[in-house]
Length: 438
View 1 (cartoon, helix red, strand yellow):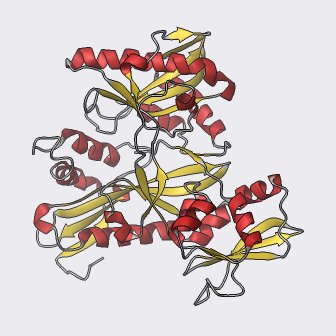
View 2 (spheres, one colour):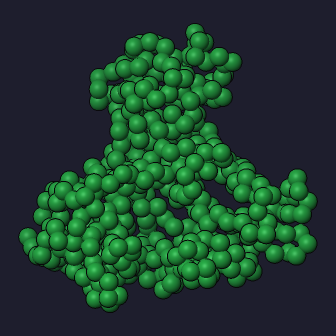
View 3 (cartoon, helix red, strand yellow):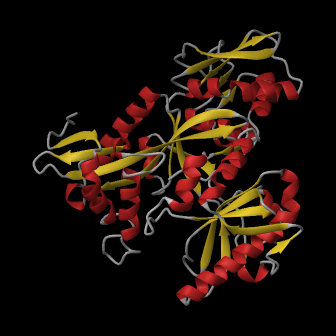
């Protein structure tokens, strides 16, 4: 497909692009950390995504090719995955490795690639897109902060317990033989009222042993064991970062009642790992940086630690009506649990461009269909709530409650107190226990 600038052609990635894309990304990403040299960890990640990754392949890359040379001038990759909330599947595309060669910058190639990626996701029914990265920049491309990807305090190494086993539990490095048990834990967690990103058996095998050694996205996986049985897991960095920080990306227990006895065992294991990395590197082990929510059980039951500001994920919803339709079972159950019954046969939410008509039978939510957006939804008598799309995204993902949104979005307008009450119950805060599949 030719862009408006005929110097470039946007196309799908090919297996033969691997070396070129690895070079493009490695020479543009994280250059300060690599001392100006190609970043070996980025290059290895590109090769892994191109060859053998369970969630991506060459066709998931989009390339802006310099027509004159036939070489990639810019590229990105869309990693598809499924998130779950209360048993409901939400298709998500995570955007990574967005880069333009220095000599081709200033030609809007990032904007062009994102437009092509969004169209691809729209056609394939990928409801949500997410990306980490440059502050503010991705707002220009339709993204907004709508999730926190951490926020838990960091735990100083001196605060970690010294006992690495107890109450019948131990923690050990995972092997590929644990993949089935780990996938079963993730599957059971999908019905919880949290946002999760489960991995199947193949994805767990890949995380444990499938990545290249230099892949910057390689992690170490450990399992919580009760004798021969796997009861949970930890996922942490393969080295110390910054000023001696071990990064914890994920932690899970198969049974909620296990957390009380698992927490000291898990934290002690992280202390052992941090000390091992320190001995290998000659650098001190200072703390565990928990990329977890403050509401996570490991955080709530662990030492208080050092508070830090949560980082945010940019999110985008291409079709708000589709998102609400997917969440229909969750909305139904929340209203039902609260004993709420809508008094008429429909409730219309307008997102200043889309309109969702929520249909009710005997007061219970039975369907979500596409309505007719009005020119002025905030004053339209047939609209029950006018909600900007970014505000709706924050509500739907449980990042903000309706009172929070009303305090910061003057153009979020519920028609009356009844609508406001229903939407407040529909959209509570939700814990994000997300370790996306990169």
